[in-house]
Length: 196
Image (cartoon, rainbow, N blue to C red; front, side):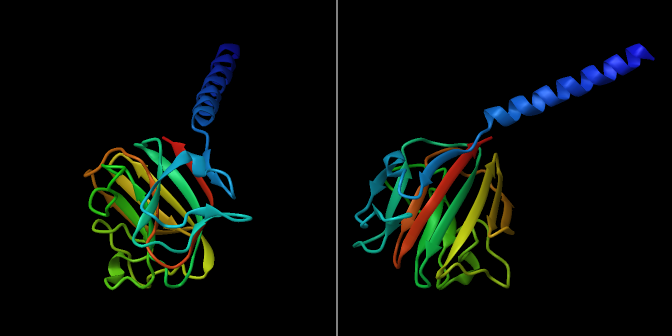
């Protein structure tokens, strides 16, 4: 009986060690925290990216512009706290094939675009990959949280705690992340990532 108890305790100890080791190696890394973090990004395009008292923001430019991470990522979970005006056109671009030329064809884009003409790929959808179902969510004129998981070919988008896209797609496997300004006003107050 003593040996059985000893084996059971040892098994529990080893299991807990593996769990704590895994948790310790998969920590959240902050990319933007209020006014800190623009140094983690390169600017592509000419929007007026700047910091204010509590966020990184953009309000104007002559065309689409992105903050693009200096690092590439493959499998990860990213959390993004953002505020978008009702007329905003933005998105979170992931696994971008070319960090100097960002498009929704060579990146996965979790859209932030309440007024998109084809609403099926509006806010909550992954453009050209995963349409969002009715009733379609909106993000305009309020703070929102995206939690996006890219794990191999399994892509999951959650907006404010609700899954809006869950799809399998293997077109892109790694690349930098881009935060877009296309029109309207965008604010990012917290962006953090955990590699899987």
